[in-house]
Length: 499
Image (cartoon, rainbow, N blue to C red; front, side, top):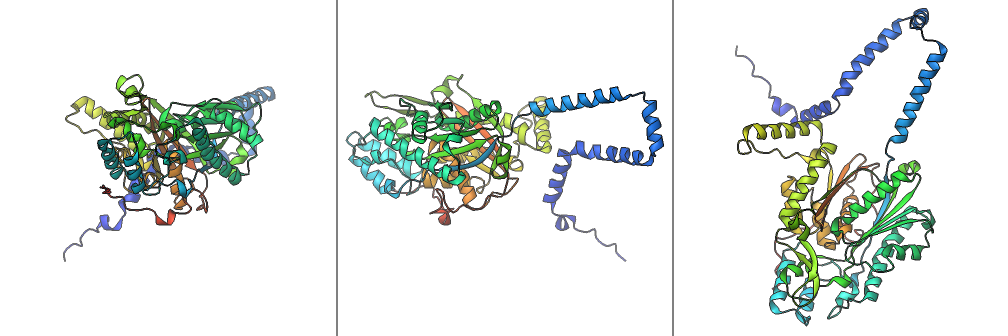
């Protein structure tokens, strides 16, 4: 009688769960080693009677004074330990500005206005149209009212009007969602890269909401699209020093005064990509806020490549030959962004990656040192094992494509970034919050999920923030996606022919 064939293990066992079990075992190896020791000690103690315990205590020669001092020392050490631990920082809630429909800039409107501008030649018009065709932006992105004029009206009054519109709208929505009283705000951090009036935007908020006179307010400018995470980092540090506090972080970019009216191709790109937007975020270190907070901040990692001249000059505000000011984007921008990202994830990796991925990366590094870089391919850690959600700065289609390729992410992982770019355009430092809003609007955020925010900015900087979801987030009925989330995701073609 022929022997029965071996069972098909590959068809009967899901290897995914085997891999997950191995990963869990590696991450909790110390716990699994200590459990048998603790169980054995407990069983031995259970066998000893009261008389034996008393005799054991006397044989150790410990009197009441020694015991009291030992307990006191343990209490002091435990108190010092808990006092020295960083205070938890919670994201209570956030709100994003939702532009009015009369601010929309469909492709046809953009093209028609570009043709009517007195300072653009035909080559510049065609160049902007080609950029827009491949940008990944949709028909519903918005520009401030002043940019709808022909020519635009970049006055100080119009710039302030845009700032008040986007910032106050976001803060009003946040106050309505959280029930926060403006007088309760202890820390205010505002970031806007290119518009820095006097009085500052932070002073404008203090005046509008009549905040306390002893509020700690900060106004960050010139720090590019990654300034939103820099503001979060600054708020986190301040919350470590000031217990029982609320921190309001406002991130925006004011478009009105920054329209480029020249014909330098490298300075025309911002005209095509940047759109209006803002976000207001409420952070707190109050432990009672944990019950209603959405997320807890785990890590912020900042990488600055400004010591390299190429990196420093790759996003540079200057005047062209005709005296028109604008932002010049270097051809090396994507290569520099890749270098900054590699430096950043080298720091982020050990903080978030499971032990199995770290061991593989270490083995790859050692093998490349011993065998040479040509004899061994570098191992790219699988960040999908560390995060459930990715919010990549929606700076442009090329940025999202590059990160998807380098981090080996699926289309689903970058969906929020692509859809935020399509619906709202590049809203600079606030884009990450529109992406997080997209994930919530789709009902995908679950308790325990981890979120990785990645931002890039002039200087050149790459900044990361890691959040953990504290509760399953109910699908919101309001917010910037409320009127269109049912239509997303949408297919975004490689090229949208306009001419």
